[in-house]
Image 1: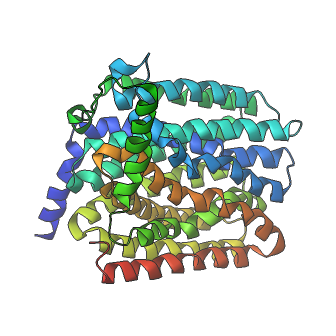
Image 2: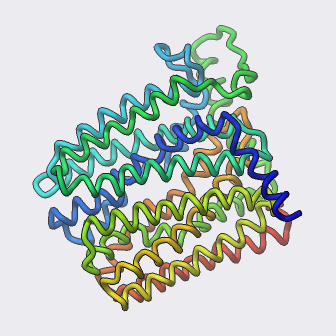
Length: 427
């Protein structure tokens, strides 16, 4: 009986829509490390101070504030791309911009032009965040509520494969190419997203969704746009019971994992691991663990429901972060590193899938891009704002103390989750 339920839950992964989710997830995931951990290694090898490396987290601020321009992407159609549809047209346009931004970033030497590198990384993050707005909306519109967990799991699988490309593969390439050439190769990752967009169809929900397009004077058109695109999406969300607690929970749930993220590669290098070892362990074994965690997470959500999944995966996220303390004392032990990274990434894959599925379930199809952008921005803020202080902390305390502090950051989110489950805010 138990295995029959899991088999039935797994049938959703055979749906043909999942292939599009895989490609779009890849397109969404690969730019992140180009302004994240891969860039961190480039900066460290360029002798950039730890505190400044930590502050480079601020270049990813667009991920935390993409809700500001999401109404434009949610409601407007681009003149040259409108035949592709509301979602696909924007996706292709943004991908052209992203390709140009990554190529520009590739030709800058961070040791000589640190400020320029920060600015271009900011532009790449802005293009990537804009792409996330439309691809997240495409994913949400493609599935019914009961299917969101599985759809999110496959999207996250593609996302992790994209990170594998810009993480492990990029680091492996540094043995044969300089960093400029590596980033030029990375720019080719945009092509996967372009091909997926061109060969996919607009979601059925989006094709059924129509807007009143009667001609109005410019002022009235602007007034209507502001009401429909800015006011209505947020007003619709705020009709939810205890919407403030929902936003706070999304902000806190991944705080523990996201705080340590900017310093993870710096920690590996301090332990004496080479780029090749980091690539194989952190970005291959770890990524496989994340993928497995995401797929198992999607199946567990379908079987047990979101409340139980969020609670279990939240506990695992905090517990597995403590394993890094053992790694700090063991030092250069590649076997323990493999265990540490795999345990951490398995829990992270489960937790991310559950949170993404929960956020998707909150969105109204009429405003899915804007509402999901708001929710995912809150998920990004700990990584992009609060985590910018991680380098300062790492310079002041030992690595065991650093990871203990990061692990304890899981407690506020779990406490709030318990309250929300008890009050049936999450059901």
